[in-house]
Structures are given as structure tokens and as C-alpha cells.
Image (cartoon, rainbow, N blue to C red; front, side, top):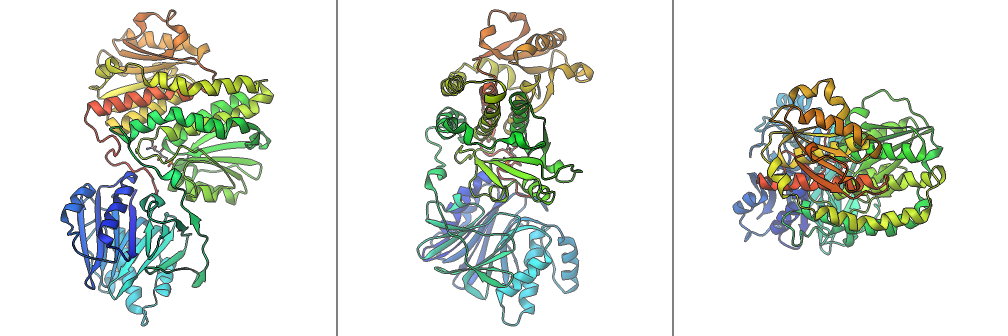
Length: 596
Ligand code: M6R
């Protein structure tokens, strides 16, 4: 979602701001803008659409040592230049990520005081309110001004501010939206995440909630509750910051391919240390929460933990969980799954469950993210930076961790031997490669022009199909629906005819005959079928059952879901490519969903 960049330093701010915005592009946006000091005046340039459009309007010959920039993902008000950031009111210019919930009330108060508004945004109201406090404060003490604003603002915000009369300071404040400060040599950056400046600085500070930062070219002050505090300096880990597309046409494809080598990395990191992972069987209740793909990973986790751990697990969508009645206490473990570690709905659940004294374990990709810092224990998924909006390698990394947690219990409950387990995981990278290199051409030609595609499966295969369906929707804009195959005849089969199409997964051996019966019911109505099933069944599944088939190598059930999702990622990618979609940056979507 919205991305913030800010720069103060010895170099020209303009290319720095644009470079930073480009690094934040992956978060998702629909307009962009910058504001910078030029000869003691603040200049603002904005554009709807891609950063390239903004770049065309900028005169890079102009010199500036202080500026802020923003990519906006519209929340309040349409995608227009007038609604894009930066916003300027009076002496104040700001960029904002988050939502100011009480902006309507503040707008009324400010209108009564003579302020008028040009945009439909909550951000312009925040800007006007900062100006109002600024005008009231005779000494223009920014620490006091911003503290008063934070005491008035309700909602989430990371805000970077420049002030017309203070051309040598950059201000930031934050609550519930991420903001980091990068410390270079005679230059300081601020951004929504460290990827915006990771190659420029060696240390950074994570701004905490209700903190204010006052920054100059080579000094920083962090202030909380009116008092200066010494922040913790963190070192940039450049290993995790590579976002090079290499020879691939899209990040998504690169990230699909990476899954095989990532398994090798995870094997070294986790497989040899299974018994060092937390023993989750000691809790009376286990809840898993996440959104989108992370929720699907949690659902797979449920099946694996129940199967191998013999413990009941319930999985919840975070945006629902945050408002539902909870029956949890100190005997509950809440497992929180997130790639970005910044998802607002997921983060809010942690704050809530902590009030019930429940324990929290994070399965998180982004180190030092807000969620990683909020949970009691964290297992990092080590997928590396995921750039494409559609999650692929982060999902398989989450499944990998769940499979480890499950077989840790399975070693005791199911008499699994370590040698057998290790052998299975060591085979996985090669099997993934095999699946990636299958021929998907006929299947893509069959599917790409449908407006609706059903994704069917039973048991754990159904969950994999939920993830496959989400992948297709996100990047190809084809509507699709995932459904347990056995549920079709309770309503949805009324839609099925010669014009419909279903992708069906059947890899849970004891249920394959049942799924095949469901396929026959669809075939009888003329529906086209793409079947994804196990390669040991090539001779036993009748050809009449499918129009196209992908044979997936059969593996142990605890890793089968990792392999099964690969063809679905490729199907979604190929279809989106054939339809000419913007695969890495699908419309309306954001990589990091930092608003509710
Ligand atoms: O960063 P998170 O894992 O918390 O994000 C959760 C979802 O927003 C995310 O998985 C989303 O569904 C992806 N775009 C799916 O590909």
C-alpha cells in the first residue's frame, strides 16, 4: 500500500526520491508525487499512474537537499492528481500512509476555523490540522506540535512532513503504520520499508508507535511523550535485499522458480534442527490467523498439525478474527502468518489476543517487521524479499514451516523416522523443478479465454485450490471460485454446462475415487476439466475424465501440498501473460496491506 520516502542530505534529493519510490513500487499504488525545497520554496509535482509519468514532469537539474515522496493506493477519494500526495496546507506539506479515522470530525472543526479543502482525502485534513497546531504554537516547536497532533489523531499513520519555514529539517511521526529511518553519511532517509534505501545506508532505526523523528543532514532525534530517547540502531542485512529480476520477464516467474533452491536453504536451516522448533502440543487451543495467501497457508497448517500432531486447530481470517468473540486464554497459542509482517488486520489481532494473555508465535518472512516485533516467538520463513504482489515462494515457505511443526509432532505420534523425513525433503527441490518444467501450453490455450473458472478439490486439496483460485483472480482478473468437490451438488452444479470449466485437484489418495465421481458429474453436463493428480495413477484414471491433465509426482503427505501448488502458480501466470496483464503489479492490489 502507500509508500513513503523522504530524504535530507548532501546529495540532490530528486533522483533519491524517485529511486526510493521505484523500490517501493511493489507495494502497489495508483498515483505518485514528490515535494521538495528548491531555493527556499516548496515545489510539488504529482501524477496519476506509474512513477515513469511522474518522472517525465521533473526537472532533475534542479537541486534540492530535502524532499518527500509518495506512492498512493487510493482509500479516500478517487485516483486523481488532486487526491495524490504530497498535500500542502498553509506552511505544512506531508505524505501519509494509513487512515485518519476521525478526519470528518477534524474537517468540521478546521472548516469552522477558516480552513478549506481541495481534495477528498483524510491526509489533507491531517495536513491542515498540523498547520493549525503550527500556527497556534508561537515558537513553532515541532516536537510539541506533532505530539498534540498525535494526541488528536485517531487511526493509523506514518507521516513525513516538511515545513516551509524550516528548510533544514525533516519530520516524521507514526502510529500503526510502518516507518523506518536510514542513516547514511551526511544523509538521512525515511521510508515505509528499508528496501527503499537498503543499498544507501548501513544502519537504520525502526520508528515505534507514538514516536516523532526530527532529522537533519547528519543528526536525528527520536522523541516519545515529549522526551528524547536513544533508539536501537539496526544493521542492514544486504543478503535479504536483492530484488533483481535476473533473466526473468516478471518477478512472479522468478519467484516461482526460486522455490526449488529455497527448499535447499530451508532444509539446511530447519530440517536438521526440527526438534529445536517450538513444541506446540502443550497448548489446549491453537488458533491460526492470516489474510489471503497467509490464511491459506494456515489452513494447510491446520490439516498437517491435526494429522501429525493429533491436536485440534482452528484457522481464522484476520479481518474477521479482530472483531469476533474470542474464547482464548493463557493456554491458547495463536499462530500468526504473514509475509510482509505489516498487514494491519493481522497486526491488530495480535494486540487483541495479548489482552487475553494468549501466547503468540509468528511465521513471518520480513525480519523486524511490525508483526515480527509484536509476537512472543517468531519463526522466520527465509523466503527472501518477495516482490510480485501475488505471493508464491512466501506461501511455500509458510507451508514448509507448518510441515516442520507438524512432523516434529509426527516423529513421536506417527513413528516417522528422521532418515525417511530427510530423504523426502531432499527430493523436494528436484520434484519442484520437474513440475515447473512440465508442458502447460495446451492447458493455457484451453483456459485463458474463460470468464469463470472453478477450482475444486477435497480435504487438503481443496485448500490448495483456494490458493490457486486466488492466484488466478489476482493476476489474470478472471473470476474464479474454489469449492470442495463434494459440495458442488448442493447448489453450484446448477451453473455447470458446456460453457463452464473446472480445474480439479485429486492427490489425497483415499479421496480420489470420490473426486473422480464429482468430475464425472461435471463431464456429464459438458464442463471442461483440467485434472491435477498423482503420477502413479496414469494407468488407472480413465482418459474420459479430463480434457487436460498434469501428473504431479507423489510424495509424502506432509510435503505434497508444497508441490501441488506449483502447477497452479504456473497456470495463473501463463493465463495472465496470455491476457497481457500487468503480472507483478495487478490493478488495485498492494503487496503490503497496511490499512484495515
Ligand atoms: O503480508 P501478508 O502475508 O500478511 O499478506 C496477506 C495477504 O494480503 C497476501 O497474502 C495477499 O493475499 C497476496 N497478494 C496473495 O498473493
